[in-house]
Image (tube, rainbow, N blue to C red; front, side):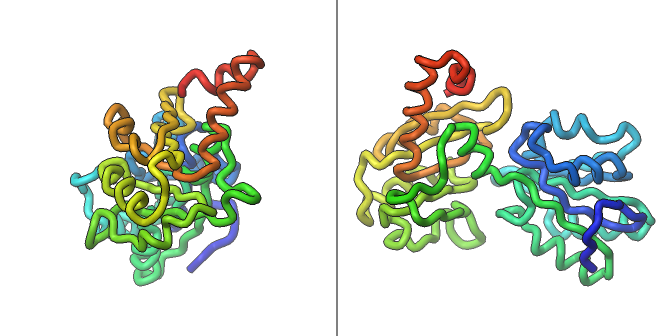
Length: 264
């Protein structure tokens, strides 16, 4: 039962995108629902800055997943959403980035629909959009990148079960989520299927947060470069990544831009 309003009613679940980390990148609707929440189930990618905006009375439940460490199963998360909603509470499901992009939203909607629980969806700025903005680059470019691909580097069957020939065409931007551990294979496969070794790769760690790190590298050196970074780290592959260096060069000449490049 999908709702389309900004009022948080008793017994309802709001599935909300927390964006890439900075609290001022939240939508107004997200903030209004956060202020009304009785209980929040949150992921590990939700920043401390965003969590600090929740009301003091709100119960917080960490259901975050880490690579190889699923402390709370997806089935259990669905059960908790239903459980608290049936108690007449306003339940906030807070997800990093946008809840509709690689966030297992469909499984949670299935649980709510099967239980007859009312819910509403609130989009957030995606990790891809946020990290691209932090790096000062576009994700698409006329004449260079007419396609944009969001790719999960992990699934239930293989770390990188992709159509590599299709991904290795040059007129597109590839954005890999959850790909740091598989970056060596990603780089190898893209080169084997046609992209050159010096094809640009941008690594963005903790994008849109005070501790963000941005590295411009290439397919040949990407895995080695990523060894110095921790997760979450987004991988942007394509010619658009070169604009990050242009931003850094400009920052040397324009002091107002220097702060944007300091983390790189």
